[in-house]
Length: 343
Image: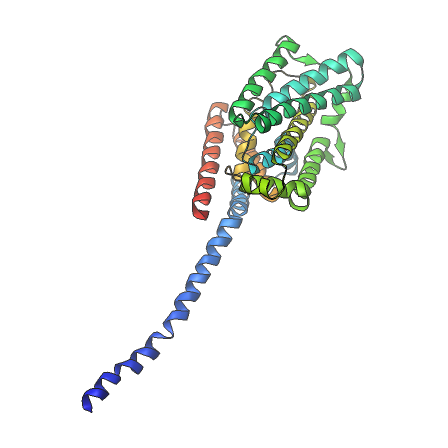
């Protein structure tokens, strides 16, 4: 009898001692997961806010109204093209030809205006040229299954060459000074290019989050085969993505030509890398299927703030190339770490 009692005693003793520990450990784990999720989702915004505060206190004139307007103006073209590059990246593609398209559109617009005197015709022809470039990229990638890297790399060289051939390698001055109003006048206290950029953020943000076009883009980037089985016309959607990309890049080229009062065949060099870095820094995945317009806005502003601060500090342009390359590396590294965490 005594042996039976001794064997039974440990059972109730260990039961109550172990029971309270389980929920405490589970609650701690849940809190850690929530904290990690919050840090992952809002890390880029926190970085942006911290960087803005630091630069405001350490860089002279950075927080002045005049510099804030200059900062917004300097990233307006990058912001416009980043909106459409967001769709390219979200669908597992990218476009390296946007810088060349900007240069060619500016040169073409200047030449048409000089020959016809019509600003409307110059802008219209330039936008059509951008659409043709985008259509070529999209059709080649979607229909002929040629890699986006090769396709847009070829287009980048060819379109840049066309810009130099059309202009004889020289800047094309614009005779109609009314054209300069687009890039240099203000509307409600802000330069017009900033309003173009804001409009792109709003339009493409709505397209990404509220339309079938946006949902199909994310579906293609997540799994093209599954999207095709679900009834999505993958080829047509990819063509549309590059078509819109070409039009917006051409519009950015027209605005840039208005700002600098001429069509420059060597403008926009390295532009595509800045745009891709801003998108990836803003959380757009290179693996496709993930994008947010708020992240793109923050990524564009971070790129602009860093560039602006270096200019205010009179840092040599050669070192600025290193910093921009470092930002691109940092953005891609973060994207890869996020993808591994989700795998």
